[in-house]
Image (cartoon, rainbow, N blue to C red):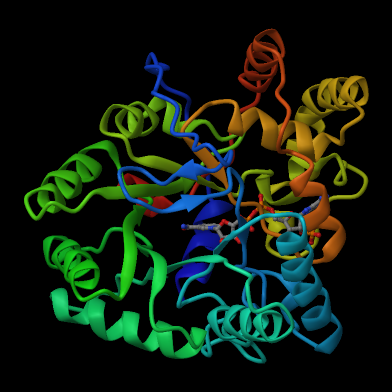
Length: 364
Ligand SMILES: NC(=O)c1ccc[n+]([C@@H]2O[C@H](COP(=O)([O-])OP(=O)(O)OC[C@H]3O[C@@H](n4cnc5c(N)ncnc54)[C@H](OP(=O)(O)O)[C@@H]3O)[C@@H](O)[C@H]2O)c1
């Protein structure tokens, strides 16, 4: 349901860039193993995770159809990610919702992929992040634990690494945050986070959890080279100040930043209403420069745009991989760094482009 809401609004309008706030340098959270510590929690994850929204989904992705071929490709995406050393996977209870015809729940698929991998490779460790949907009829802290237990059942796990509120509720948010704290205290999750939270909501949630000695580990928001609202609305600066990791969703602008889509070859389905030929025409100068930089490094444009995000510090992008090739390409965004001049140049070129609208809940 949430996905339909988001896709409708995504296409509706544009946001106007506002004053860019000065972003404070954040102390590096890199561990000795080259992993990132997730906020103030003990969780250590790779500096890039994999998004599993498209796995099993028929409401936004996959041309509204799911089949065995797509299933095998998704499983290969999972296995290749693990082979490449990526240990963080992001899903949600609403991904692959049963309300959408022919869909399979993404948590169910991720759980299956983990189980099958562990049968072959018992030592394998992955960090699972999933999300609670703040649906208007869900009231109080107990609804969080009930939903989490259902997620654990679909995943076939006794606990998850990160449990996030998918978006702020229209009401009942204090109860949800209490529910996150309860989940930690009951040993059902290692760390808790929020998603699509504004600066004010972030500060309130942080303080509420802090009273119980629980760190708010992350805020998952829409952030990419061409969607820099977190730099403008105080969210990135607040994450840095409070030691909350910013998890960047749609980091390659749903494929638009890879160079694969052009005005002559726009994406199909709901994405085609967002990344229109007109928008893609305006994007071309930026894409051309990304391609040049990529060539200089022997990298791909996708790896450059992900590296740009990782270079912002305290940011973990979670691009969605539909197959092994995409997963492998994502792994190549790690272990190197664009120069400061290139980072600034790309931001400056990108600021010429009016961004598409985000998930409206981030303004709640
Ligand atoms: N918290 C929230 O509200 C929220 C909202 C959105 C997403 N998310 C999370 O963030 C994750 C990623 O976001 P997203 O899926 O919206 O967008 P994204 O990661 O920016 O884009 C993913 C899409 O880009 C295309 N792609 C992937 N790798 C590519 C490559 N190497 N070359 C060319 N195209 C490539 C694929 O679609 P095609 O191959 O069909 O082009 C893929 O499905 C999601 O899976 C989900 O876990 C969270």
